[in-house]
Image 1 (cartoon, rainbow, N blue to C red):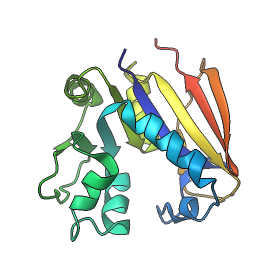
Image 2 (image 1 turned 30 degrees about the vertical axis):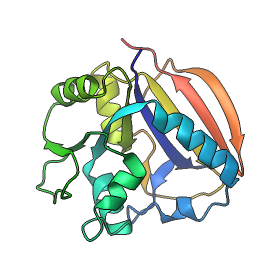
Image 3 (image 1 turned 90 degrees about the horizontal axis):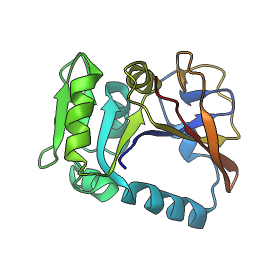
Length: 186
């Protein structure tokens, strides 16, 4: 059964990006490469579509220089259709199935779920988008890798109250702990 999964990483003090909206801190954390590769392959193999917030999309564009090298998107995410939710106009990537949407997450989620073809929908980031999906009763799972770093400020993992999550898995991946929670739908 297809799920909507918020799969992300957080600092020990609960931030997914630093005060400058950068994720570079995450790439500076040492990892066990074999564990990380196996975990990534297991996860991405179950994903049929992506949903991203605008800040995450813009960071990936800049960090990976995707406007100059759009093929990198496909190297990371394959041919999976992607939706970016934003109130602003953002640059598309040539040859990549990225759709831009505004407003209510429900119709976007329905399109992504349909396009996923029975596979999961990955909520790439950020926390507010995951929270909107939760508020609409559409978030099924939270998978978060906790890094041994504190940022002191930044974009919170989930900027709202969510109760009733059920821990279903804990794994050590190098210096990080990956926690998997099922979310009780209302």
